[in-house]
Image (tube, rainbow, N blue to C red; front, side, top):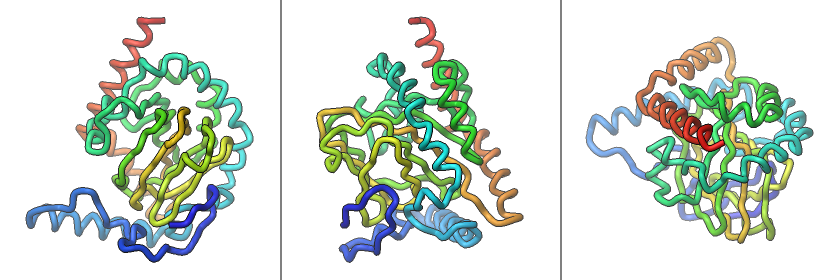
Length: 268
C-alpha cells in the first residue's frame, strides 16, 4: 500500500489481494439463488460504471467536481456548527442504532452519527441546528445522504464495501487529530489521510477500511451523492434512488432517527 494525500490517484499496489475489484465482499453469497442475484447485481454495477460521466476510479481528484471547491471554501462554517453539536456527542446514537446493517462491522459505541439528510429520513430537528451546513449541502448536485461521522480515539472500522455504486461518497474533513498520519483510510489498495477543510471523494463500493490511532476525535461531513451518469441512464438512476426510500431497512432507519431526534429535543 502507498500513503498518499487526499485526492491523488496512484497505481494499484502489488498485494496479495486486489482490493480494486469491487466484487470483493465481507460475506460472499451462499447458495444458488444468492449467487445468481449477486451476479446480476455485479452486472448492474459494471453497467453503471460503464455509463458514468467520469472514469470509473476508486478515488477522484476533487477538481473533477466543480462544486467541491465551493464546499471546501466554506468548511469553517460547517466546523463551527459541528463544534456546537459535539457538546452532546456522548448522547448521539451509534451508527448501528440507526442503520442496523452497520452492526456487521461495528458493535461498540465508538462511531457516532448526527444525520442531516437521508433517503427516507426526516432530519428536520437536526437540520435546524446546522443551517449553514444545510445551505452548503445544497451546492452538491444529487445529494442523498449527509451526516457528521464521528470516530472516537483508537477506533478501527474493518474492511467493508458500500451497497451500490450509483452513489459516490464525499468526506469533508472537519476534525483531524494529530499525528495526522495515524488517521487514515484505505480505499482499494491505497491509503489516504484527511486534511481539515479538504474533500475526499471516492467510490465506496471499493473495499475500504478506516483507522483513528490517535487520542482525538476524527470527524468528517459524510455525504453520498448521485453518481453523474450519461443520459438517459441518469434519469433511470434518479428513479432507482427515489424508490430506495421504500426499502424496509431505510424506512426503519428513518423511524429510529426521528425517535432519537425527539428524545434529544426533550432534553433541550
